[in-house]
View 1 (cartoon, rainbow, N blue to C red):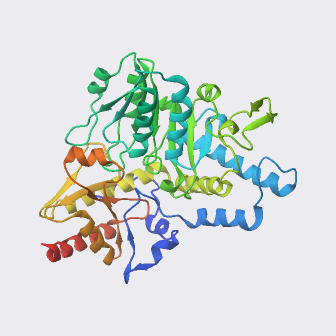
View 2: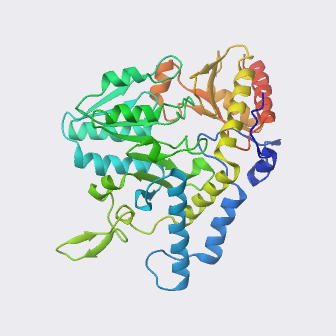
Length: 412
């Protein structure tokens, strides 16, 4: 049943704002269901970046001429847009990076290296993306720290009591995804932060999947670090954000060195720039930041409460329809889920199914989703994943179900 909210937007009009959805694939209207990997871009984002390159292009922070000053205003205005979106206390806490992966690596190679020593512990969950596992493994191998894994149950859920039993005085960091890219599970991050803080540990939240789908308030969560990627939230690729509490950033050494992250340089000594520029070496992705700000305005024009309701409806409808297919098993059935359905079909390799879906104009992902431990937990080599966005509708799901049934008849 369609979830209704007061003044709910017309999602068919929202869909019309995405030029790519007007095209065909293999002679069929495109159905795009790979939003967990990257979301499509509305005209407002495309036009904001196009306008910058056509009429506003200049480097930021360096020029005293008008074009550079206007570019700087746009770039720093984008930072303020992100600050408001996350409810950070200051723009000093908003660091522009290439994406969630770089944000996590920044924390690993700056904060963690400066603060962790042998036998200190980092806890990650079993459902993490590889980008929230491998940086900590590198630290384990190089520094001798301990890396512990908080396991999930058969539904793909984290147990808070298990976390309470794991944390100790040796625990220095909890690294957790707010929403699993492979399962759709929405984790109780606020409660997890409270548990970690009870033993003095810091918390890094991977928000790559969460920010396009739900309201995020880093002040309310009280997390120490929060990472996001612009391209997941209808913005451009190559731009993302690390939020971190100002006191932590002030104490952290630079992650990269170069122009703009310095205040003064001599061969004897370098003084670093103030926040947030201390962590933004070199010419930044100016157009990307402008595009990200446009994407946030697009999301806010719809309302995250409306987006969440729309995607909850899609998830419920897709789950019910897919469960009608003989031999299909959904992987990950947490009580609290975002708009992701991962599944396998008995006797059919996920890659074969995804290839046949493409012949019907349906784009969806078949892989381990950069979450191999999740596949190992459920004893599958890969899953087929349909992940939803603001432009998807029931007709997309009907197309998917019909194509699966047809493909099954060919493969089995």
